[in-house]
Image: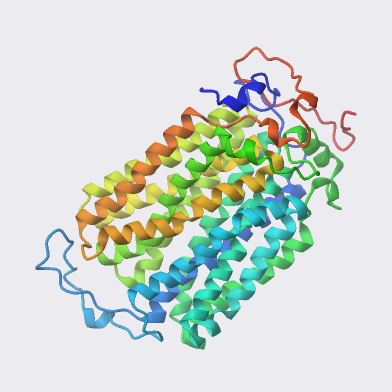
Length: 524
């Protein structure tokens, strides 16, 4: 592996950072099947799920809000898929409550991401001062309240509707960096890949629930149909917020219900986790760190592909493959359901591979990254050759979305790997740039298909994120950031105890900790 310039000080690192084959490492006190950190993982994952229901539901609800307009006959056009033989445009046409044109709809759908991108850094930094419990929980709570107000704002004026969507983005934008701070505090290095994956995959589950329920709720006559999508998901957010603030604490040592064995287990890896002290941002070191730039580039590549599929997939399925609009929500749900199943399976697998010593943490990061970028890139290239085969189109899209979910154990863990004390700040910086792809990706797609919505134009749409995946993944694999950086600590690196036991391997391993039940004591 290539060594980045600011990694050279740690060529010999703690034996716990990277497993060695045949050497099993403990991941929990004996006899423990559920600890308070597992409750944290469950609630955090559900929190991401709830936030995504409120974020994605408009993509389905807006179809009912503006109505469905018939497609034109495509028999006389070139390089397009023909309409189905049983297509009846008059049967599909419905009248909505709003007369928004395509441009206005694009503004409304994209407005969320302006606020979303703006709040990553300030909330990530605030989480390091005030704790991830408050900043993460408050973000979901505020968004839930705003979601309940959305129907009133939409019917009042378009400007107010856009404003409240921006405010929702501001509320949810800091959730990822805030949660990253908590994960750097609670998850030991050997459990980081597994629990980060379990936590963040809640976003896929939330997307599935939103696509499935939003379509069904819009079909109901009660309260006009589409407002229900905002009332139901907003109420779920309020219920989640109550559970979050009741059951979660910022740090393990502050939790009233944590066992002595679980606390001991977490504290044995404290030197590789977030400390209670707030570290000043070493701007010069951060901006000039190759590690940070590698993570940032990987974030941009991932977000460009993610937002291209999330925002443009409904248009492609409806206008190119001519899927029944009433079935679109169910079809869109399938790739994200597979992504959730894939990420859960991958989380268990990488957890076992790490703790059993089969693969090092470094190899886990690289394998997860390669699967999540290269395989979706191949699937998107495959989209260029399927023409009007609707079955193959769904297969390729399912592969692209599902395999991309393995990146939760890839670059998404790297902020915690290189600077646990600044994990929230770093993710705030990188996700700010990544979230801008939520604006950039649809804009580029719009330019490509403007007045030219053909199979050829959509090939260019799919090839663009495929190239982004290949370039950014290759850079990450060559310069995988894995070592803790010297600027992570609140005191100069030369004052730290950087002496570790040298192992007879090229890659250091995670420290072995033996537990004797609840009587285990931390070394002084």
